[in-house]
Image 1 (cartoon, one colour):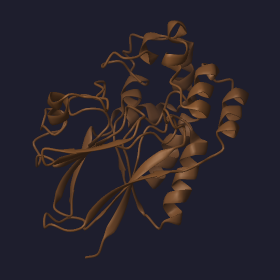
Image 2 (cartoon, rainbow, N blue to C red):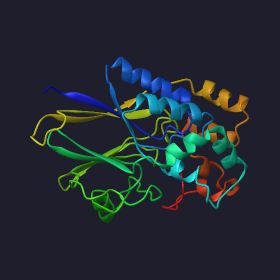
Image 3 (cartoon, rainbow, N blue to C red):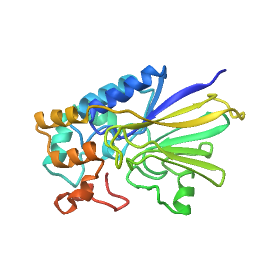
Length: 265
């Protein structure tokens, strides 16, 4: 069996323009397998179309914090923005999102790989790039949420909207960054894994980060035309890579603010 490539995308957040650009790049590279690490909805204007396209194109779809939080009928936090993003979805999508699996395990080129959205314990716990050793090791642990599979040697996740790679103590950790809401550099980013699938025998393996330019101004105009709330924050994020909570934190509801590690981002 020869080398195979798998594209990993995450945190599209209703940004259909960015998703379409990334999917076109993936297709141009001849990559057929796509795994999605969650957060399809919220922040951007076209969650419904994003969900439909990801259901069609992604072999694996994983639960994100917004996917769990936004459609939750018992959600205690509510405001105009959340109602807008939820109403933009169909009711069948509310159910589909909340029933997504927490994590996905597979093997490639001798690596035991685990993917999840934010942490090994819950989609609502954030682990940033400046984590300590305890947080690092915790990402590789089997938990009630991940189940008792093979303990991973490679972990990939999203949630923070900031791509990074780290190798330590014989373990490899990477963050895919965000397709639809990338911070610092607002250019959409995704990851390509390349290796021999379905084998624990040692073999060549690589992790590649890819940034794909797109028409962010056109995406912003769609949001404006549709009357999406929090337009100022969306503009800050997709045009400048500046998190809305850093731009005007005092004006935001708590689910947008940094840092707390358990908040929804």
